[in-house]
Amino acid sequence: MEGQLVLEVIAVDVEDAKAAEEGGADRIELVSAMSEGGLTPSYGVMEQVLSQVSIPVYVMIRPHSRSFRYSTVDIHAMTRDVCVASELGAAGIVIGALTGAGEVDLISLQSCMAEAQGLGVTFHRAIDVSTSLTEALKAINTLGNVERVLTSGGKQTAPEAILELKQLQELGQTLNIAVMAGSGVTIEGIQTLVSQTGITEMHMGSGVRHEGSFNYPIDPHLVEEAKQQLLIASQQFMNSSGMSSGPSKGGPMI
Image (cartoon, rainbow, N blue to C red; front, side, top):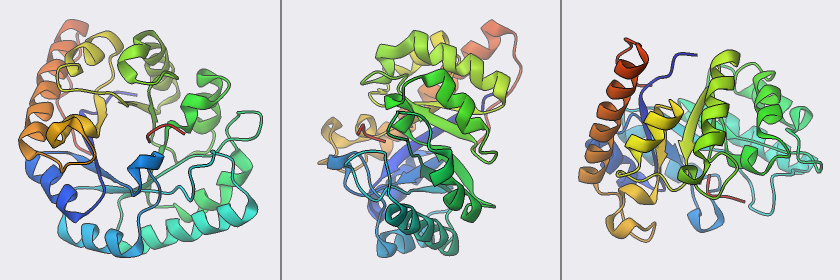
């Protein structure tokens, strides 16, 4: 899969979302409760954000932070949340589930995915605590409508997992599923991540906030700087690898 050049920014409210858009982010991941790694935002927050920004918004579908294992009741709630996100105009959802054995829970995800027809789908960092990153990616690909996985390569942060991310990127290209690097991505680190892994979709949270913390709002100037670094790094990578594609838009903290 030929990689898109995408800067995705985590937003927790409408002010965040507007700042991300102002700074030139290509996509927003809308979440609540970042102290718990990111949960499903409320109806009201979804409605506000989706009515006030024009860039694609992907809504987190995660009912609790206890684990990535979900009961039948959890899955029913997640399915309803997918429907709500779709009805409110989300461009996509961010979702994931694992079995007790640490494998992708394809059965539990089926009903959610059925309601996600017409939406973009990102499989979140549940993959990072699966028993095998490569086997998980292959399983995720069988779901059919997952566009990408968000991953830190199984490590705490993406910069710690250069080799793992490069391996996933190569497998993703074979499977025609995108790999997006997330967790610990900084403006200064974008160049290294792109040049050493070939990944050109970056997911940023605290790295584009005042004081580098989720306790503070998004700084649109930092978003702009991150986007510029991604453009430069991606162009350099494509030139060095002989590619000619231009930019296109489109637990752990997830």
